[in-house]
Length: 193
Image 1 (cartoon, rainbow, N blue to C red):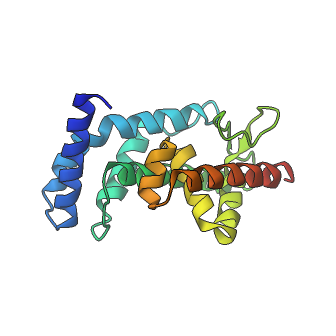
Image 2 (cartoon, rainbow, N blue to C red):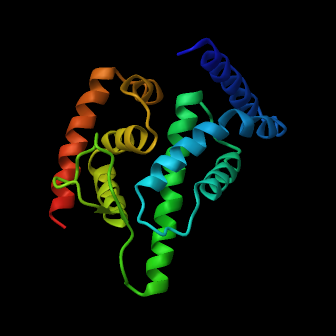
């Protein structure tokens, strides 16, 4: 990490600690510190969405930010934790949007997304149904909650193995094993659909 990135991470950790301590004004200092990273996550996720998607990355960032700062009783554990929760929030916003669109179409085309190369749940590289992925993640969470959380942090949050291990307070080897098992399980689950 560069010196500037270290400074930003330090400032973010300080603001998150202030939020943890109930400083409501810290939320105003948070957005400038996280906006670029949230936008990067949103842009990456939007690239995986179908063409003509009605949500824009900027709107996605704003909605996610509002949901994140509204979690007043959340105990932030630093930058990696915040980014992981933010990525999951963005995922849930997209899933909610897909459900709403499907409800409006009364079962029309399902919302599809192409999964990141590292996940490899789609053998042909074709698009995977976002709602099917969400359902599979929910099943995985019931079977292996930590594996599902690893997928959320790594795939949706873009966190490294080291950052994911830090957020989950486990060894890097545990994250690597959970990641491999979760990818295999999701691949099998989604190919059965």
